[in-house]
Image 1 (cartoon, rainbow, N blue to C red):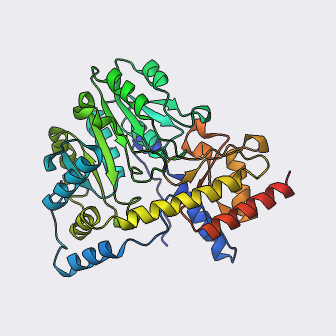
Image 2 (cartoon, helix red, strand yellow):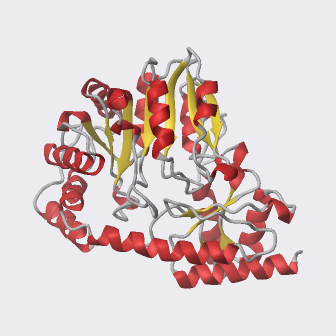
Length: 395
């Protein structure tokens, strides 16, 4: 490799970008595996199931059928129609294809919405603990990040009063995530109705991250877009990765007012041009084909949830509430006397269990760990045993 003699001068905005610790831990875990150590992966937020066969077949046929060229930047018409119909069916709201934009993954919806709406100095409310890219993107565009908490005492539901107290004339965007990563909390419909009523008269938008909407174990999913007064003010972020085990296909979508779709499409044109055509054909099959695989995966996640929560609650120093959605357990580990980062590092290096430290999801995540139960029951049981043995040996 050639020696680099000059320094790299970056734009100052690059210093404001954060990262996603799940990928950092995955690399470290894989390095340990390369040394011959057995690691149980509970760090990455990815379904361990194969993409359903009918979707793979549709994608394969699309490749062979010539769907390998540029498509419209906002997405293929047939997928935009399928998304509009699917959202209308599940949320009970009228959605037009012109209100849908298809992106290569869910993150671009988040990034483009923030780029399009947030000026330097504008305030954005976001959950803390929460998906770390929220804060990263707010900072990157020069916005002011205003975190709101999700407390264990409230079963990680949103405290509407806290959001209302933090609203100002500079608030441009409020980010909601339900079901929630990393806690597994689900926002109650009564709280959502109250928040909708309070936000309706304000000049702001809500970015509603609903990527885990099909992974709810009690009750039904609610969206703030279901409240008529918030329909035009809401941007729904969703995709195929979690519901259909399609993380590597890189396909998400946003549902928003049509004039904002045009602006997000302009950002698509200026960045990635379009989402891969053959993956979009597979996406049509995902939405319109059999949903048996979705139901089967959810029930398997439900079984795994029981195993990991019960197992963690038997480990000294750990206390874990049952998540109501997504596929994450978020145990309180304060009684261990260790920081979340130190404990996560110890479990990886000494017990062979990869997980994430709570503070990687924001300062309010300190005192917790995140375990993904997107792994087999056998491996989850083995992980719990290892953690329990490590805790006993180090108490």
